[in-house]
Each structure stands twice: as structure tokens, then as C-alpha cells.
Image 1: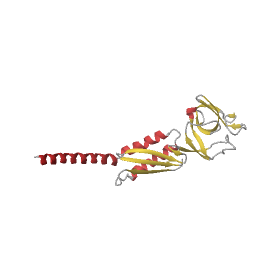
Image 2: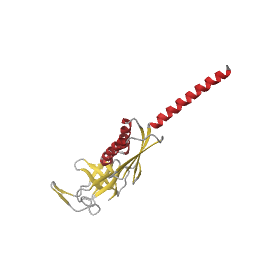
Image 3: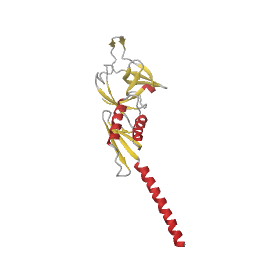
Image 4: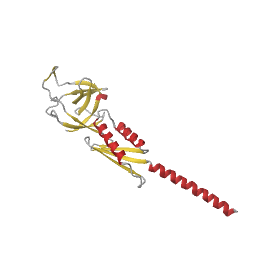
Length: 203
């Protein structure tokens, strides 16, 4: 009788352990680590799972790459918004994803491409020149930044002053700039710090 009781207890323990292992395996099989590598002009997406037999669908990775390319080129995207987009795509494939962004500027540093329009930053930057910025609100006097101007859209200028929540941006070209609307002196302007998209790192 005693041996029968021991057998039943052992059987129950084995069943409980098997259920736990199955649950853990299921949880692990649904978890994937996504590494998004971008230089501002291209994006590569890699996936790894704890369980070797769990291969992430190519369609999911392609969808992530397409969305990430759009996000990288958008002046309104952030590290958090990109990660949220990647997680949302993973969830649509029944995966719980951890997202990591790698770039030439470091981990979770999001680059963005831009093209200079105009001659206000000559001789430093020329009209039509391609640049790469890193999206950040951390900048200092002397940095070249891209910012949103309420009338002119995205502009590239040098930080001249920072005062509270405002930043004064100036052109490197100090010659008079004539436009179709009249005469401008380099479009120097005060803007809210929140309007700064990021710091130009490559040009």
C-alpha cells in the first residue's frame, strides 16, 4: 500500500514537472530577440530565439525591415516608437519580442538621413549634400542640428545659444541670402528645444 502511494505521488510530480517544462518551452518559443542594425540609409533585421528549432518567419523580418526603413527616414520617429512598431509586428505573428537598435553611433542611437537644401550653411555644408544626424535632444552650443521650423519645414543650422526651453540657431553663411520672398539674413531663429530633431554627425 505504501509503495503504491509513493508511486502515485511520484507520478503526480512527474506530470507537474512535465507541464512546467512544456509551459516554459511554450513561453520561450514565443519570445524572440530582434536586433535592428541601421546606418541611417539601410536597415538589417536579425532575429534569435532561445529555442534553436524556432525559426522566425522571413515574412515577419521583411515586414520589420520595410517599416524600420520608413521609421528611420521619418523626422518624428524615436527609438521608443521604432521599438513599439517592431513589437507590434512581432505580436501579429504571435511573438513576444525584445528589440535592440544598433547603429554607428551606439546602442539605441537612431540615425536619420537628410539632404541640405540651400546655401545658408556654406562653407560647412553645401546645397544638395547628404548628411546623417542622430536623433537626440542632447546638444550643445556649436553643434550643427536639424530642426523643424514652423514655416520652412526641416532646417539645418548651428546652435548659437540655449536659453531655458529655447535654442537660437544660426547659419554659417553670414552673407545676405536673397529669396523669392525678399531678403533674409541666413534665417537665424529662436525655436523650442523640442523642435530639434537631432545632431548632425556625418557630412
